[in-house]
Length: 110
Image 1 (cartoon, rainbow, N blue to C red):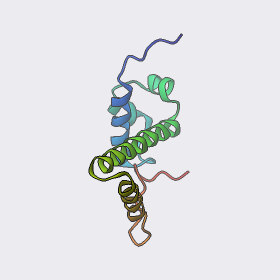
Image 2: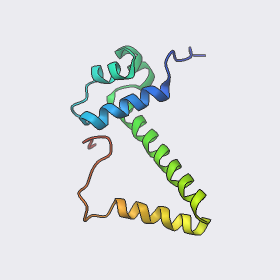
Image 3: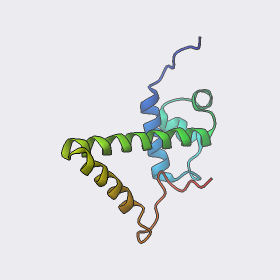
Image 4: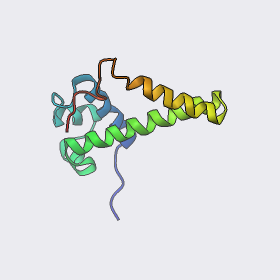
């Protein structure tokens, strides 16, 4: 059995998310991430792997949180069928090609 983590993983991921939002993927170094997350480099690698894997974990957290918040918001305001329509309508509006594209969390392109 592994040792429990000596840091708050959710807070560390939120701090990493802030780094990626502020500076973008390419401009954010592992050193920047570790400092912002309040952990050292080796602990970052042990907990999350490399920068790419950390970014994927941050992206997953962002997607889970925003989806959960959106569903909760619509479910409390609207009946189920209308909530589903509203959720998909919001998604379509966000990805409307007439708007300038903005990649979440900086300029990461795989």
